[in-house]
Length: 493
RNA sequence: GGCGGCAUAGCCAAGUGGCUAAGGCAGCGGUCUGCAAAACCGUUAUUCCCCGGUUCAAGUCCGGGUGCCGCCUCCA
Image (cartoon, rainbow, N blue to C red; front, side, top):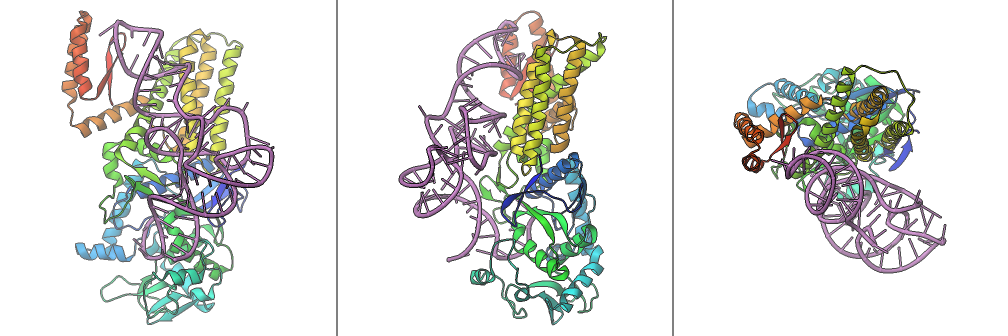
């Protein structure tokens, strides 16, 4: 089956055809480095991480470019507030961004260019636009002239009259048209600046993406992505700049991820509901956050709340419980001596066929515009099938069993590699989850363990009343016990 | 005011013309267990916001209505 992508430019799902057979160039707008990353950044990062991971498992050679805006008004503001150089701000937040992304299991893009390191390219590009009559300089500022670029508005589906009628664009006497946007901004006294043919200044926001995508991916590349808020004006402006300069399409497919809402409200500074990634990760395992986001389609809005993360946690625990059972079953088996290989029974063939079928369906879901929600449905079906298998395996010859378990493991590895989950050893996951939950609830491990020991002693003397009393006591702390032949394990719910 | 999106069970969420409307969470009944937990089996939407229409056939297409949301200003 072929890859399909919903293209914002046409508002349709299209069959993906890369410019170069077997290779994909993708550019995603990264962060402006002036504050720590929040859930919204995390979603965009995870969405495109999965896109790139999946395309790679499909055999594409992917060049993934994600930029850092490291010079911008907000960065300068912050630097002024703290009384430090702007580079100190941008470097600090780039570093924190990288830590957050690593924690989320987001793979590092192929190239992560910074705006300040591409001044020459930007200035050259502005020069071309000026020469071709698409840009004009007023008093040290350079603006892109919308009226000279007839296709303006193509991506967002707006026309000039409508936008002017919208009349919410800022008033600036220097601009010929209120929708014209800055390519180059004259610097004020004391502001960071770079020399240019138009005098000292710094680049406008949009030009960096045009310059850097061109440098690393060429004049036309396959996929351009970002958050849906970037459609207008950022991506519209990028298209105008790049296409006016080259006369060629900028990108063939435009992908935009939906927003993260917080308890059904828009996340915004004024509402004070910004959730930084690092705060969330103190309370939840990173894969929980990933799973939560991947359970919705990437273009839909997703509503972040404590309860939805708690639900995602239960779902992930379901998966890791099975992964752990699978691991134990395999370990137990490898300790046994392998008898001679037998033919598969009809029942065993049935398992193998079903696993194969689920793996195919998983890929088909991702082929269809990266439908991770549907793909996860198949992951959970695989969990159930694996549980069935583990319950059934007693009747199977060891060698056949080993083969089927290995097939199941391989499928989970594939799911995990694409979605960036199941990347922990199962026991490790439960350990880490337990630590997080204990910290969150301020519970003490020693106390719990000591109660469990007392209960164990009571059980040995068959003092069920006492054992149950302790179980009840722990249940009040949301601790659920699981008894096995000779010990008791526990988990926090 | 302009442009766009969404509305599916108690909650979250796939499905965009055709077999029994995925999956997760929560709940209930059962198997297992000293009791539990996990797992498994069964169960929880005669119906997809409302009203019309197209069609042999609609959650899925078209028209109208209602409600919610996003963008148009920096924003993932």
